[in-house]
Amino acid sequence: MVPFARANQIKKPNVSGQFYPANANELNSFFDTAFERAGTVAQNVSVELLVSPHAGYVYSGYVAAYGYKAIQIQKYSTIIVIGPSHYHAFEGASIWPKGQFETPMGSIAVDETLAEQLMSINKDLRDQPEVYTPEHSIEVQLPFIIKDFPHTKIVPILMGNPDPAVCLSLAQALNQVVGNRNDVLVLISTDLSHYHPDQIARPMDMGTLKTVVQGDVEGFWNGIASRKMEACGFTALTTGMLYAKMRGLSGAQLLRYANSGDETGDLSRVVGYSSIIFYKPDVSPVDSLNAVQRKRLIEIARSAFETFVKTGKTIDVHETDPRLNQIQGAFVTLKKQGRLRGCIGNIIGEKPLVLTVRDMAIAAASQDPRFPAVTSDEISSLDVEVSVLSVPSKITNPAAEIKLGVHGVIVSRGMFNRGVFLPQVATETGMDLEQFMGELCSQKAGLPRDCWKDPKTTIEVFSADVFNEKDVGM
Image (cartoon, one colour):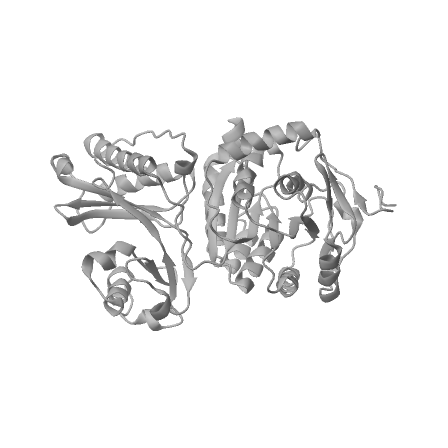
């Protein structure tokens, strides 16, 4: 016997009042606070895939708000929500094909037409209503959805036992059904590592997120299999990553990472959460910084490297501006009388921007292998430049797609040969594309000068918001 009313295809909530407030006013109050905490989130790309956490709102809701805030201005007719089954083991995937899902803020209708299309072309999708009780991975997303998109329909899908063939067939079916439509969002519901101490969980999650943002499906699946990575919704996330590849969603941005310890203060057994958006980029533009934010980053960079050079200590940085607390990559460059004195960066952001800039400033002064460490008597003669980076995107035709002076470029082959040039390198040196790419391959990556023309070489491009002390009036 099915343990809930099925006659009218109405799905009652399982965890309302437990994972999230059962009262609409309380939910709206939470959303107001969560979206305010999310601050400024990039909304200038057309998001087709969103990764969002599904724990109780007091733990993961503030992370989820970053993703939902990023898509608020989008117009979706349907959101396909794919999550893991925590309580039932079954083969294939389970779809809820008809009716409605109830939430404290109203009901959300199922897109029955799209659900039927998916079932007609994918034998792995079955109508198994029993697996939706007492599951929460889809339900926790629904109040966010109805808050942002009160008239949008959903297609709920729960993933069963791990099977890469099921992930692939579902991704193919999604791609076929969505086709040329631009009004469908695929939403992947997953948390990350579970119940490790913070000092173990955080680097584990960063490794997981790096493979996800880079679209490395094989690396992600193998990382899960070897237990070097964890994600309770890894089959759903694998499906999403495959779907992203099929649709050319090579733009990806990690909007926020945190774990339960960041909210509770208990770092002994934490669960990790993330919000990630995927989109088709030209090259994803950097979410621009205002004059105050740029000046603050320059101040942090200078204070960080000066303090480290003088005392060997790392400064504490506490910043309330949400934009400066977004996880983002950055380089810090030190120059002496216009000549390079040190430059170190982190391309894929692993920390809030303020901490990335702090750490890269220290590294530029002390760890650039091309130069000796900066000394105290040099400090006053050094100029500071910060480059805030967009997420890199893979390209296949570098001769046509690279815009010198606009794009930074990453060349890589295998695990050990990798080189990076920032966008300003082309401007400052006056190199043409052949020279620029030749130097990047040979000097920075340790590869043949013309390896960038070889399809076996991976080429990625990114944009940068570049500013120095003179630019910010220092």
